[in-house]
Image (cartoon, rainbow over all chains, first blue to last red; front, side):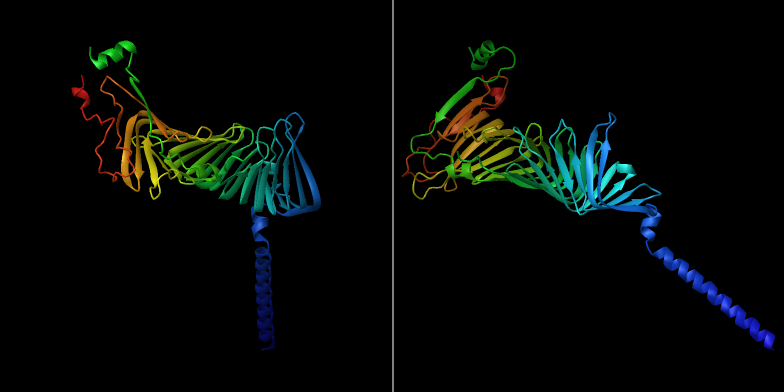
Length: 191
Length: 211
C-alpha cells in the first residue's frame, strides 16, 4: 500500500514538472516572439551612431545617424531610434530625412522610417527648398528613391501640396503624388 | 470665286485660319477682376507629378483650380512659374470633353455683375499678360446678372483681361467650324436679353451647304 502511494506521488510530481516546464517554455517564446522570429536575435546595440554608405567607387554616398542602433544577427537588420539620413551626393542638392524610428532591411537596401517623418531637399539659385512631412516613409538610399502610401504634406518654395501616397526619385528630381491631391500656389509677390 | 476656294488658294493644304477677328468690347465694359491676381490659386486633382528640376507641376484627373473668382476645370493641368513669379496654367480636357473657364469681372455699372464662362479642348491662362486662350471648339459667353449677353465661338479665342477684348480665329473651308458671335447693344438702360443681337450672327448654315 505504501509503495503504491509513493508511486502516485512520484507520477503527480513528474506531471507537475512537465506542465511547469511546458508553461515556462511557452511564456519564454511569447516574449519577443515577434522580433526573434521575424528578424533574428539581437546581437548588439550601440548609441549615438553614425554609419556611412559608400558607392561602387568608394565615395561616401549617404550618412545615417541615430540615438540608438539595435542590430539583429540572423538577418543583419537594424532598428534605429531618432534616425537621420543624409545624402552625400555632391552632384545633387543636399537631401535629409529624419524620423522617430527606422528599420533598416538587407544591410541598408531599404530604410523604413516612421513617426514624424520629415524629408527636406535644400534649395539652390534656380530651385526653392522642398519639405515633405508624413508618418511613414520608405527609402532606398543607394537609388536615392523615397516612397510612402501614407498621407503627405509638401511645401516647395511658397507652394503647398498634399496627397495620399508619394514616390520621389531624387536622381530624376521627380515626385508623384498618387491620389487625393490638393494645395495652393501663392500669387506673385509684390515687388 | 467661293470663299472656301479663295481660302484654299491662299493657304495650301488643309484650310486653316481663314477668319480672324479682333472684337474690342465697347468702352465701359469690365476687366477681369483685378483682385483675383493677388489671391492664392487653390487646386485639387486625383494625381500630381512634380518635375523638381524644371519646376513644372502636372495635375491629372478631375482637376479644379480656383483663384479668387477665376475657376478652371479639366482632366489635365500643367502649372509653371517663371523666375519673376508669374504663373502659367494649361488645362486640357479629357477626350470628347471640354475644359472650362469662369471669371467674374470688375463691376462697371452699379448693380450689374458681369461674368465670363468659356470652354475649349485646351485653355491656357497667363497670369503675366492676364490673357486666357481657349483652343478648339472654343466658346465664350458673357453674362450680366445671370443674363447671357455675348456669345463667341471659334477654334481659338484669346480673351485679354486687361483690355476686355476678344480675338477670335476660326476655320473656313473643308466644312470646318467658323467664327460666330452674338453681341447685344451695350446700352446700359436696355433690359438684359430684350435687345436684338447686333454685329456678328451665329452661322447656322450646315457645313455641307456652305459655298
